[in-house]
Every structure is written in structure tokens, then in C-alpha cells.
Length: 264
Image 1: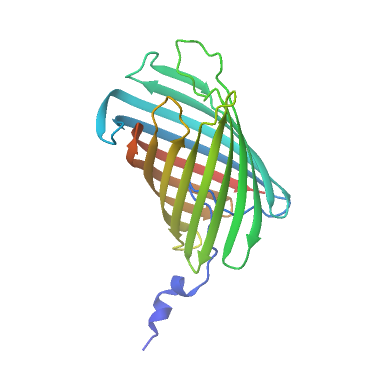
Image 2: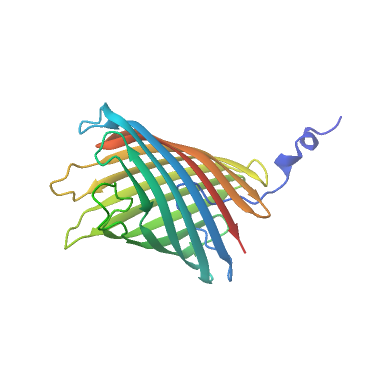
């Protein structure tokens, strides 16, 4: 009788596990001397909000946001990357006045330093600087930038066990505004299963909350991302959908995500 394992060759062949996820930072740097280029598109839509008590409320009009991002990352030396991300967004909010805006998003400068790695796991520090844009925009448009400087530090961990790819990250951000210590915490957890060399379905859980908000109401949100990573010789294509499932003073948004990445 023919062995059953011969009928399932994909399960008997070792495959390279993709560490990257759609919305969870990973701890894997580029190969020495490599450059990575990334393009991202997102379409967010919200018709409800979570109020101060965490209950769903009709927001009185649809919020829609389309964002395009382009990034470049360079491996400076083994285990250390540096990169920049630029973006452009169009926002329409039927419940606001002004009700729309188009323009650049904040510029992000970031780095990744992998300080621990073995055969199955890696840990890295990811500092970043957010440079504001949109300051001084016309009063008849919604600003597409935060108009505030910010810094952040994230610790990311990546684990690969056979075909299972796990990721986790915890980050803290600070708003630099005349001594104001406003900021946010973020926690991300991700898991993917490498079905083949080219396909990895994934699921991610995200939680973020504002801290030191001063007179502003505290905000928090929890979301789930379902996605797929498609890998090939030309690079990687990520497709997914993110849904906010709980929150406080937050949009109940659904976001479609598309990411294309190539390295050389």
C-alpha cells in the first residue's frame, strides 16, 4: 500500500516561514546590503463610534479615509535597519465641518535593531520619530497630519516553529508638545500558518489606548486583522481586513489593507 505521506508532499517538505505581518511589527531585519521598498494602500470606513462608556453609537455620518504609503528601508549593518515612510491621504467625514481633506500624512523615520536571535526566535527594538505635516492647512479642510511631533519605542518578538509563525509587540509613544506628556500604549499579537512557500494566512489582535490625556477623554480600541501573505521571487503581497471590535471614544472602523514589498 502506498504510504499516506506520499499523498501529502506539502506537509513533508520544509518551507521558509514568512515573519512579516500586515499590522504587527516583526523582529527580522533585512539581509546585509539589502534595500526594501514597500507600498501600502488602506481604505477605512466607519458609521458608528464607541462612546465614553464603550457603547456603540451612530456617528451621524460616514467617515471614509483612503491612505497611500511608500517606504524604503536600508540594512546599515547586520541586525540594524533604518527606514522612512511617506504617505498621502484623502478623508471624508459626513458628520464634520469641514467634511473633507486631502494631503500628506506624517513622515515616519524608523529603525530596527535585532539584539537577540537563535534558530527559532528573535527580539528587536524599533525606535521611531514622527514628523508632523499639515500644520497651517486651510480651515476649510480636514488635516491629514497630526500636526504634532512624536517619538515611539517598540519591542517586537518573532517565533517560528515548523510552519507556525508567531509575532508579538508592545510599544509606547509620546507626543512632543511643549512639555505635554500625552501618548499611547499599543500591544499586538499575530499568528500565521505557512501553507506553502507562497501562502500564509494570518490573524492578528491589536489593542491601543491613550495615556496622560489631560483634559481630553481617554480613548482605547481593540481590533482584529484577518489576512494573507503571498510570497514569491519578486517579493511579498499582503492582503487583509481589520475590524475594530471594542473601544472607548473610538471609531468602529473597518479597514481593507493591501501591501506590496520587494527587496534587492
